[in-house]
Image (spheres, rainbow, N blue to C red):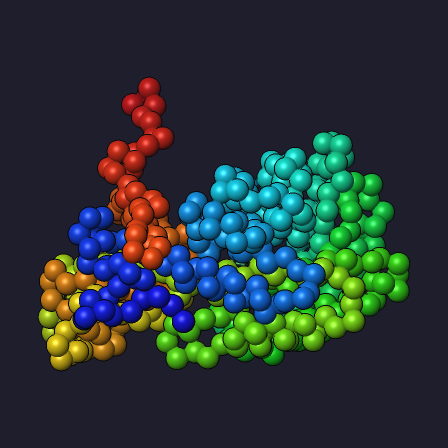
Length: 418
Ligand SMILES: *Cc1c(COP(=O)(O)O)cnc(C)c1O
């Protein structure tokens, strides 16, 4: 459920016409609905009603300041994977005590910054990382709250690039290695063993992999308890999928039930790290058709957004529905590839699909682009990073200006020897 709908043949976001925004802001741009973001966060949070829980929105899905500020205001915590995300989160107003930090490659500087700000928990992904955290905490006169990220070897049945809980993936530790690490952690002077963590992948559209992963965590928690190591926090990660096309992912309520049942009887605080499920369908990418081009074998529609703006189709072969911003009378569709201006064959938004029969100058809405859209955008081919806009009711605000050419060379310099 989202708030992008037609009104008299014009696509609107809540009460605002998308054509009107394009008129003022230019194209391409990302557009987010305040009501949808809010509703998705609240629906997710309510699925865990009555449980001792912290919903830590996963910053990497969409980390723009306005989006983060909105979630901070709704009582969300934050899941981060870099010092940059910590900086963004703090600037947007998150309480450090609600921030959890995952990732296999935390640097000493990033660990220091997390400890100095007093974040809730660091999710440790290897033994050398734990040793570094212990050393840095000692040097700073602090005690580091940690969880060990377990790789439960569960197949999330999603795209291989976003599957993270298989033995062959780089994330976390096997259950056996995790137990070993907990024993070492117990004897370290500057770490507080607080919790256990897992995150098995993204765009997961069934409840079973979550149930399986939680069952394995539970075995570990019970084994650790027998060794006198009390787990107080269970972080189940994120990964709940959304409907891009015809997927039927579990409703947050059903996901909530699976988690609730998996934790029944344990006296622990639950941490959740949802990203995509909150923001994915709350945002779209608006692009304008530049040219139509009929090749010998294929028809192409060249638009002004490329893989540097939305890389998901190229990277994951992801499906994004395309809606015409102005509904055509007959609603005609044609078979064409919708491609961007980048000099790569992989630069497409859709391939070999029937798409709205749009003419040069027409606007297209690339749906379900709120997650892993702008955060993965780049300046490839020296294209300006695009603008972002948020709508609330009848008003819209530019939450990020389109870059300028001067921004492109900001920070660059030409050494004297040239
Ligand atoms: C990316 C990520 C998430 C969020 O994943 P979604 O699929 O967007 O819900 C949560 N936790 C960790 C550790 C991640 O890397």
